[in-house]
Amino acid sequence: MAVVTTRQLLEAGVHFGHQTRRWNPKMKRFIFNERNGIYIIDLQQSLKYIDNAYSFVKSTVARGGHILFVGTKKQAQEAIAEQATRVGMPYVNQRWLGGMLTNYGTISKRITKMKELDAIDFTNVAASGLTKKELLQQQRKKEKLEKTLGGIKDMARLPQAIWIVDTKKEHLAIDEARKLRIPIIGILDTNCDPDEVDFPIPGNDDAIRSVALLTRIIADAAAEGLLARSQGGLAQGAEAEPMADWERELLEAQPVETPAAPAEAEAAEPEPEAVVEAPATESE
Image 1 (cartoon, rainbow, N blue to C red):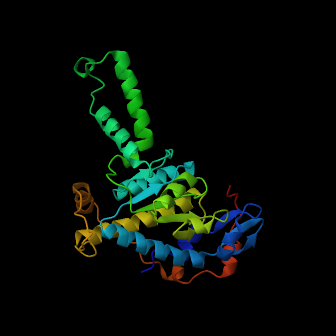
Image 2: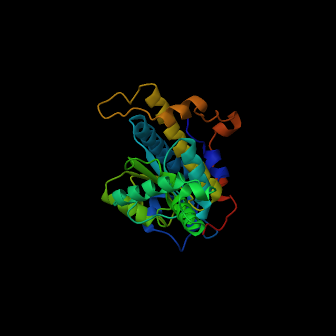
Image 3: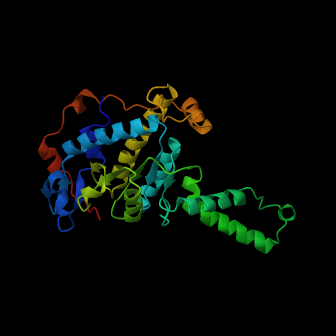
């Protein structure tokens, strides 16, 4: 069964690229044509690359790996947090702190501090042993740490792969992942550099619906990987790791959703004209 249909990609606006004056020539092979000053992405290629990324994420998670979801732009923040949380994966959706990967030891110490602050009852001044002013300062410090590190507080080690929304904006995360040779899965809009990503998905990284759909697909792949791991499939290997308690709870409480079979009317792929005639929207 297909992971996603061409119609679903069209309806989410995955095919809309950037204005023709804002493009990376390396993306030429992923472009279908140009319409009203906007590049149209070849969705047939998008489908192929989605399948590749899906298989990679599924097998990585099945073998005990974790995927770090990264997207700090406003259009991506909600989808990143929602989908990563759904499958128990770490995420960064506010601000990428330099060294989150390359200096993880220091980041781990901050996470430990955040957990210590989290254990404080800020409503009980007497029990805290602090003055009201000190307690307020500690509470603000905790809130600041939670905003930037809350999504990775349970990430006990470096991720085995990273999902990126907007590779240009998240260039710091890209640089760190490449230094550590952590595989990168990411959306490639027409202004991106395909050489920076190991598992690219040509698509719109600006529209909320496009970002939400593609992020959900990656989360679905992770969910399938968790299921395979729980059933002892690919996880039975020398490098396989036992499932954490939260992962078992996730699988018991929430069955893995599988895409519904497309209706007969949706089975046939739209003609190229159906793509180019879609209303042009600003994809800034």
